[in-house]
Image (cartoon, rainbow, N blue to C red; front, side):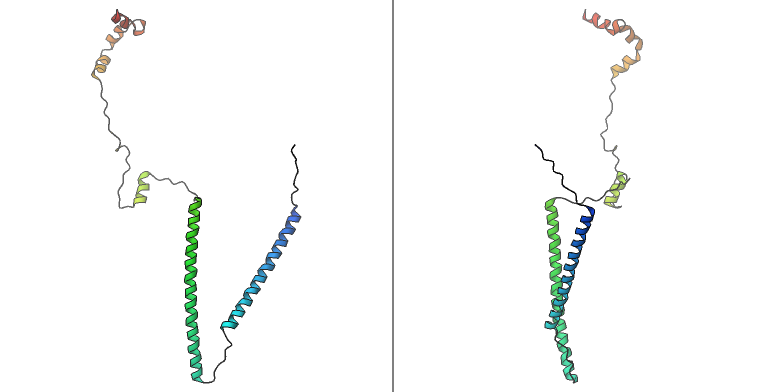
Length: 180
């Protein structure tokens, strides 16, 4: 016995309500994530960048400039190291994606369009203008000469004799006379 329970489809108003709920939750999550990023940035700046106090003398100002240049150099080195690590990781990710694609064996086939091109033009496009390629297919075929039999020529030439020989019974008279 088959049970035919028909599942009710979701109404469009219900679907719209659920979609709006999901979007509002996602919006709240994004706002919370953005606020957390701002807090983290402020925390990092307080830890690594103390408040600037300008010295009174020129010599102290020069020392402060030297310290700031040293910090700038260290930050630039760190930024360069991080950029190289990111580049290396991106390259590794691309290689892994290619390996996964190779293992799957599925490639996106490009949409091909019809091109009217002769074989000569196609080979010239592939090999370039340096190579002169001629695709004369008839030149590569084997030459066969027909041998005409001389007996057939003689038989064709004397057509009256052939008719007299094969006269009667559709040409079978001669066959019977030869056997007897």
